Length: 409
Image (cartoon, rainbow, N blue to C red; front, top):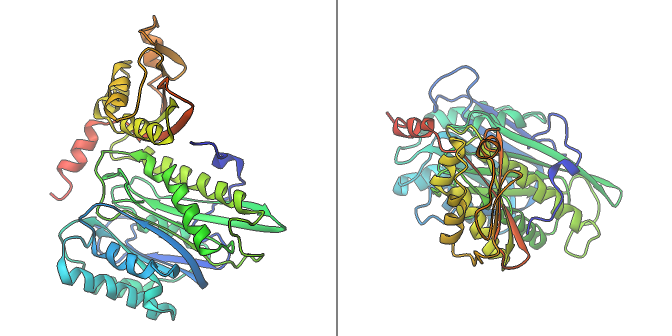
């Protein structure tokens, strides 16, 4: 259930980024992997001044990129200190050469930073089935200058078809210490995460116990990154990682610590905001769709219904065309596997009630207007209980077809 405070409840750091937490630095360069263009960057590096406790989640797609395989190995011990990423080529389905290149990227970053290669997480995003241009990546990593204010460059370097970088930082105080959580994400198409081409990297200067960090990240992802869909395609490269270096001081936060609830809420709120940024910037999208499901028999039912509705091509096209065809919401909820009592179910388009066990009279122009804005709310009560969940998606436009029909040509 989505019950934690929204990101607006936390003080957001002005011009905050993934390098805003104490002891993190980042940078990026253009190495010629992406098509050339003004201001483009395509190789990025993030590093902590101290070793970090880390948690990570990855795609469940059985076709996994070499960086996912290597990063799973490197994060298994709960320790990381750096992240190296390239955009433009995904390093997927490249066999032994792909694995060797992913490992070399880690080694190059490690040598540059003076850390162990096993403490570096690696990510690659872009076209599948093409070799990494390692000569350009070697040159790029060597040229990166790390800065405390380099988080914006990092966020800009990791994007592909995104129209804008996605980054923020939020701060909360607890037990006499101020803690910051920073984030950077990318993803515009092939977005229907199941893990965790989507990345979401997070940093914090809070001292956090490993098991607690892992659980907090998984819970946050369940209510955020795993509740978005642009096109129902699960990437081969989905990666989410959270690095905590503890440099803001204080006792280590675990499940029994007085700051535990605040840390969970701050992390969850940050992840929700990043998820909304990703959904809003879906390929060709013009609208952010928020789907709220209430009255479910269980949390699992609520999540299944909300996610199915947000991913439905028929719902997405109706929203794009401002068509108040509310039956599509019931259709999608019904095929989600969630229990639904049609006699007690209710449906709203924005604030306009359109169904309550039977169709309600409503003004179609008013209902259509509910779908015209940049932010569209769809709400459904399943009539079976008190569980709830929220999912996010975007409208489906002709531009999405154009982007993906011409992606490699």
